Amino acid sequence: MSPHSSQNSHKGMAIILPFRAYRPAPHTSAEVASQSYDSYDPDIRDSLINGNNASFLKIIGGAYKNYPKSPQKRYKAVRKAYEKAIKNRILIQDPTDSIYIYKIQTTAGKTYLGAIACLPVASYNSNIIRKHEDTLTARESVFETYLNTVNFNAEPVLISFPDNELVEQLLNQFSQSEPIDQFECSNGHRHSIWVVTQTEEINTLKSVFKNIPHLYIADGHHRAASSSRLANMRKDQESQQFLTFLIPESQLQILEFNRFITDLNGHSDEEFLSLLNQSFEVKGLGQQFKLPTKAQQFTLYLKGQCYELNVVDHYFSGIHNPLEKLDVYILNTLVFEPILGITDLKLDVRAQFAPGNQSVQELQNKVDQGVFKAVFGLYPIAAAEIRKVADQNLTLPPKSTYILPKLLSGLTIYDMS
Image (cartoon, rainbow, N blue to C red; front, side):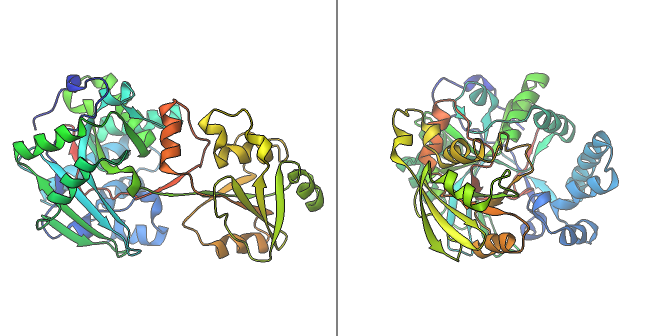
């Protein structure tokens, strides 16, 4: 490994760094690469962890099963299982520093095409890499300890950048040839990888990224923050960079988080609708729950009826802050805090969240069956709006965005040992 000093990080430009990835042995990626631990149905997860297979989930999940109460023992067991996978040539390290071009084609016809590379922690610390989410110190600390023990990044942080013609031309150019690895996952998504190894080609990629002044964390804020903490603690060169997947902003799929509520804070249905009338134009939409069709519009499904809520114009007079114009903020300010008394979305159990990939019928059923009192439908936030928030060093309220793609673990591993 030839680590790259983070001192290359100049002010105001994106520095991408090649690395020598550990990757699944040829023709085994479909079996090895895994989704995140929590995304599996428990039964499927158990059968993968216990079964006779080479899934990366065995490396992570087996340790969780064996040491549920001791994080330190668990992390050591993860490292041991990882080293065993290398010894058994389930994972093989590439011979040279490379940048990886990676394409995901979903069953719904969506394509994500970007570059897997390391980014310097110094770029994160100097705000070249910008954030839109608050991180929890306790969670950062857990991740830092984990990284320090296992000594690898197996799941890239998802990073976006404003669309850039030169970068996209290069990504398209590199992905024209035969991929070095191509496979289909159990969910039907198709994955392809190309390895850029020639110094000249790597330098070309690096130079086009240098024209991008800022990068934006789309998903993985805690992983990036913990990498920054680790770099500060360890000082060694390997820990001064972290694993990322960089894609153009327009490729991100940003879904909303719809909001369930368990009660109306003591108000009757009629009182609640009357209070909403003070801040919204309320219109009945019938008995089927529908989602809003534009920003600054909400829908509400309550007691078998769907309502459209349009924010009254005078809310916006005198607002200059990009955060205050966002739907998640408006809903908190006009409904959740003053009417429902819900002031902390992270802690108040009366508010629950449903990512935008859940069907509208599913959301309606939960209210009809009495699991929840009502559900609010939201419109997804645009990538450019998130960028404005990050550029002003502001943070979105909790559960504002559900961002795709969700990345696999164990496909290109950055080893820090």
